[in-house]
Image 1 (cartoon, rainbow, N blue to C red):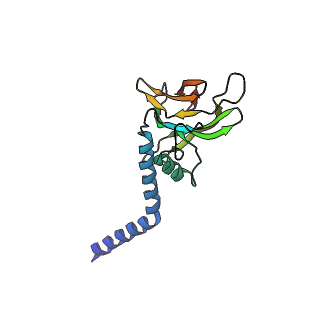
Image 2: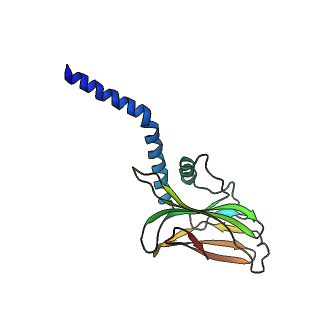
Image 3: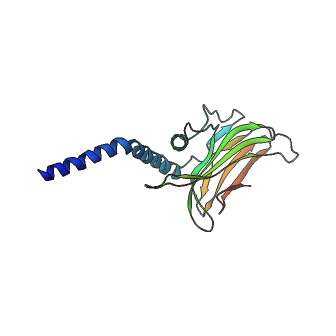
Length: 192
């Protein structure tokens, strides 16, 4: 009889724990699933992420669903993007710490195209992911300070020889150029 009471007590505690904490555990595991999909996301080389020229014929902004799901789970209600240029894991140059890195286009502003970089320390079973840096920058200036002409920005790819480096291309009537991106030890992105 006593064993049955102990067993009933343990079962009751488990049921109460699942009811009280189950939703949070499920949400955390779902976020870790989305995080994994983002860390391992592979873009299609040569595909446009953002197009102002109309030549790439994008039906909608190219934002990976795993990235939308991850960031919405991390910080409801999510974010706005007119195209995700880069989404993958990179490693810091000296420490080799893995980071989830995303580079999104927010749109055009005077002077160029506005980019938003976000760098996360990945979460684990016991820790939530942590957003380490979120920087907005206006990129792709013309040398004379005037607006650049309409441009197409292509999806970025990781550098197989350097785990802290990625590249993406920008095309405009002036030509096509490659932009280099590096994750620094201070968890910020440098674009050149």
